[in-house]
Image (tube, rainbow, N blue to C red; front, side, top):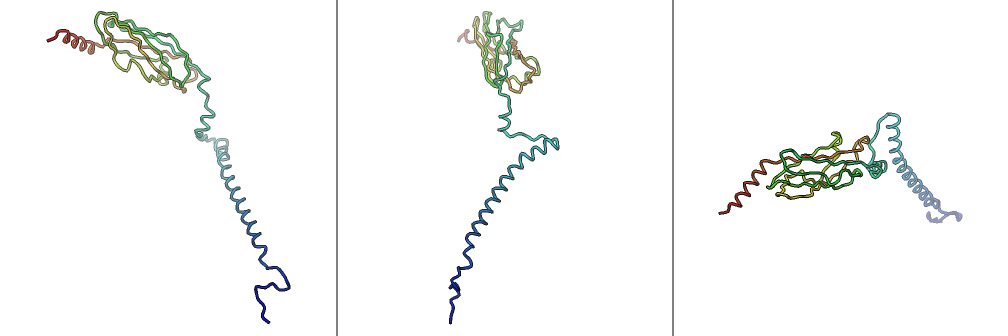
Amino acid sequence: MNVDRNTPVNGSAPANNGAPRSATRGLAKMVLVAFAAFGFSFSLIPLYRIACEKVLGIRLERTAAEGVANARPSSERVVTVQFDGGVNSKLPWQFAPNQLTMTVRPGEQYEATYKATNTSTRPIVGSAVPSVAPARASGYFSKTECFCFTAQTLQAGETRDMPVRFIVDPNLPSDVQTITLSYTFFKNDALTSKLAGSTGASHAGP
């Protein structure tokens, strides 16, 4: 009598019915192990930071997001900017700020103006030299636009408002509460002589 090897004997079930269930359980365990390893790898970052900073005394650099979150908003601080101006004795001009003080927030741009008047009877070229006090605040005071960047020409009797735009660096030392911006105008002899020569030539005509 021939017996088919694939036919169950005495009605018993095939021996491999439990294989699919075992494979499913094995796959589930692998997925759980993978997720656990992934979570553990991320937990190492704060643990490593704590170990370095608390145990070894090494301070690690903060990420950009942490820096923004921990930074003190610039709106919490204000600084007083004082304005001053004058002219050298050789320059027949009147020169002064249009405002004496301004309250500013570090990190924001502001504009102030100075008024200059040529009180002489001829055109004159002047150059302004700025200064910032206290001296250690000069590196934290940035002029983005200023009449002092170029020489200024005023015709006889002319009056002009001259703007200066500036930003106070948020990193300004906390004990500096007041900054003074001052300008002194000097006569630019070379450019004034050149201007006078060109004006005289044009008036002489052919």
